[in-house]
Image 1 (tube, rainbow, N blue to C red):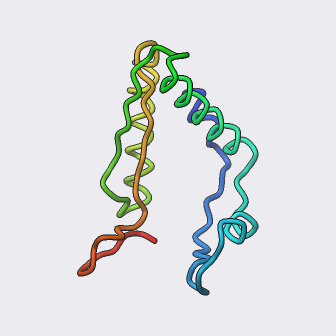
Image 2 (cartoon, one colour):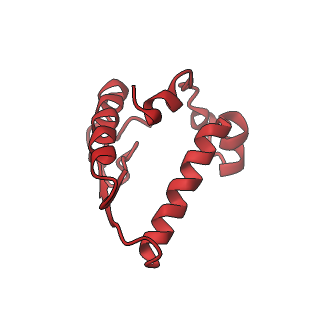
Length: 115
């Protein structure tokens, strides 16, 4: 198990869907689904790396990849795990950032996303 995978062990993701009760503010969502401190640190550290790359402080190439949208949480988890292996192998030259959409705002017919 890699260091990054070990950091995710024990994290519980709840499917509480707070938005089903009506529009929510970001503060509402944060209070209902608080981010564990370890994940908060990971997100902020990743954002700092992106800023460093964009400002030239870090000379690696920023690579943003990911599925068009998340249809299946298990498949997304597997994708993230595989991408993590590639990111670790190439971390000297690349900072690979996974992005994924949970909804498809421009889709008016058919499946609109996981959210």
